[in-house]
Image (cartoon, rainbow, N blue to C red; front, side, top):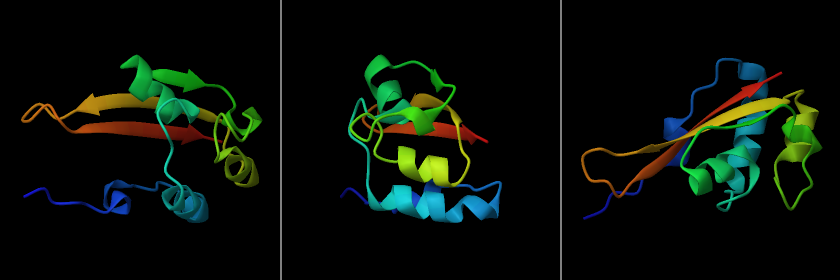
Length: 96
């Protein structure tokens, strides 16, 4: 049986003032290729953007929210479960 986890359980906020950004992002999941996190899924390597707030909505649907909260730079790294090999995760950092 596969246990579905809440994505919010895996989130850590170092700055509680961006909680609304995290909540907005959790309401709309990205597709592969969208934003820095979506690019990390496609490239299987670390991805960086100096300013995600400049992306078009089609490139990164959360760009407007990033701009509202003063978040600009982002780094994303794709991780794969070493036990099963069938679970992928993206570790994403945002910078003001």
